[in-house]
Image 1 (tube, one colour):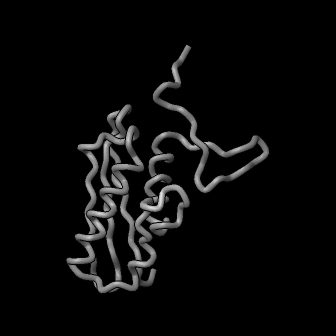
Image 2 (spheres, one colour):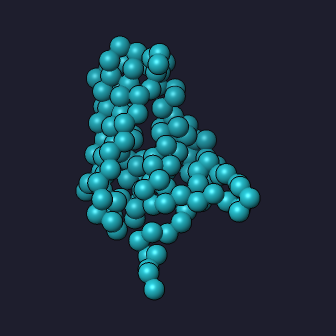
Length: 129
């Protein structure tokens, strides 16, 4: 019998329901969904976790400078370390934030703890498409 220890199902975020019930995500997709939650949740938005999230959408109104990149990197690293505990090898989490013009570039690299599989995600905030 095959084991599902390293491949559990997670409820998709945002929650979706289909004819079979709640839509599931695999481990890799679940971690990406958690990262998106941290990025797009405003600080103080969660009732019992007021420190959760960095509210990246509000950053488009800040001057795009080295100071913003450093503060965002520190806040994001701390939030992700907490949110991804047990899912991502802590020493593998790398966050890089840069900008160009009106765009903010966020790169997040990590290794899934139980699978020893590296992942890298890139997000662009602001600017026109």
